[in-house]
Amino acid sequence: MNNAGSPLADWLIRLESLSPHEIDMGLERVEKILERLALDIPNTVFHVAGTNGKGSCVVMLAALLEPTGASVGCYTSPHVHRYNERIRVDGRVADDETIIAAFERIAAVRDGMPLTYFEYGTIAALVVFADAKVDVAILEVGMGGRLDAVNAVEPEAGLITNVALDHCDWLGNDIESIGLEKAGIMRREKPVVFGSPDVPGSVVDHARSIGARLVLAGRDYHWSLEDDGWSWRGAARELRGLELPLLQGEHQVGNAAAVLALLESAGYADVLTVRRVNAAMTRLQLDGRMQRVTAGAHWLFDVAHNPAAASALAGVLRKCHRHPRTIAVVGLLDDKNVEGVVTPLAGLVDDWIAVTAASPRALPAGELARRISNLTNAGCLVAETLQQALDYAQATAAADDRIIVTGSFYLVGPALRHVHELYSPRTS
Image (tube, rainbow, N blue to C red; front, side, top):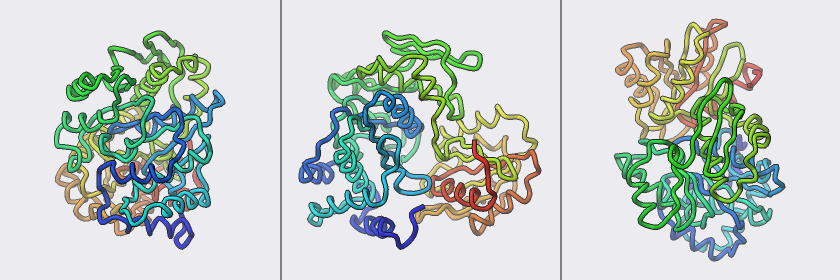
């Protein structure tokens, strides 16, 4: 958490006022600032786009590349606990002073140009990476792809994890439209992996029209679950006896398979050995993604903020039958599909608690509770504060019950901090 009144916190407040729009998609502003800064962009840049699983794929890529001796910079968003998490070099989060210095470099050349919060942060990450002279930059696309600030940087290769309905107000109301926006990270003659067997026709058509090398799950690479492990086969490599990723859920095996395909197609096939992959995948950490915490009760934190992510969470809940009762603490932003998030969980949750997430764009707890009750035909408690929601869940949960906290990053991050502070948990 970035403490209020700290120099970095003050900067972040200032950044929110530099553009009349919270979201203002387009590349021109970022391109102009990058031209003025004249940064040394790393020789190898990977773009990671998609609806779900982007953050997981970024940490997987970094875990595989860092042991090679390459210096690796990672840019992700949003953060769970504090802003610094968005910018990492060789596994270490950037400190306040480094980020502020990058902000000041941008301010010196901005000359009044309006930049959104995300645009400013994206450029700052590139400044940090240039100063650190990283060899590889892994950049998570914030929204879409074609007009996202990250796409102002030329990639060596890209990964689109999947396409599902999310950010429909900006990207389109159907899978084909959203897929075309995400396909905007593609470049002629450069590889782009699509990590789901369900590939929109718009993605295939766009790759063909610009001459990109599209690498498809189920066609160009394959994976399968086995007893307590999994196997993977690409164009020229086959790996058997792989251990399951430390990140929870079967969908993380699909993410891992896509990451291996990206590295093979981008010329990093020497990294793909069973020993190296197992060493990387079994030491991963990513807060707020199927994260289990034991603290007086069995907590599960997951930022399932769209229907596809909620379905993945439901799949994890079904596999764990030892909990007699499940309590859900939920908070969502007002542009999210409440029905799509709640419905996959409805038969798995016994008690619901609605809370207002810590964002100006949050759906008020009372309205969220009304929608949850209508969808589930069950009662839903309205919590006035996050602490009230967590205290109620903790007080009513029996020893073997499970509490899930899900929805927005703006709920899960603060809830994790509260649980750590209040209940002295052990994490796993």
